[in-house]
Amino acid sequence: MRALIVDDSRAMRKIVGRILVDAGYEVLEAGDGQEALDVLNSLDGDLPDLACVDWNMPVMDGLTFITEVRKQTEWRAITLMMVTTESEQDRIVRALAAGAHEYLIKPFTGDALVEKLDLLGLTATTVGDLA
Image (tube, rainbow, N blue to C red; front, side):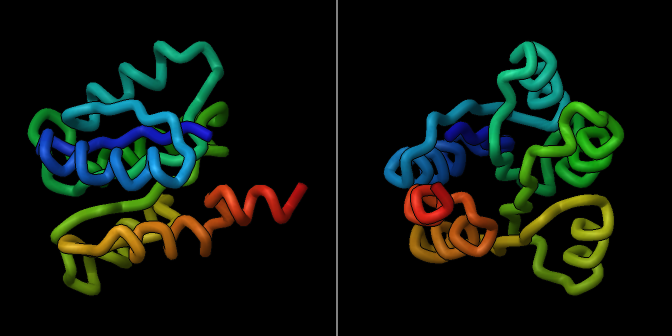
């Protein structure tokens, strides 16, 4: 399985990346929403199963990225999870309405991220159970 981590913090990309690698993912990274769109465009259809997206980033924020991904029919299978410090209820509602499947508030534990993946059916155990 493959995941794209979209966050302007290199440290946060490494933290999330380590958790995802331990969960069996190949990890791609982008420092903002526009860079993430460029990554998706470069993959020739070999898209990630999951994108973990921060809200607050320069160039293109996470909400705009999610909106842009949802406009593309060929990208609709990507599961989108906001991973952000934005904890206000209206932000959560906006992200889910824009097309995010889940919302994880920073700071979080590795177990919390894996639990979200499990809820989404995207952990190695849940994928194996489906086979």
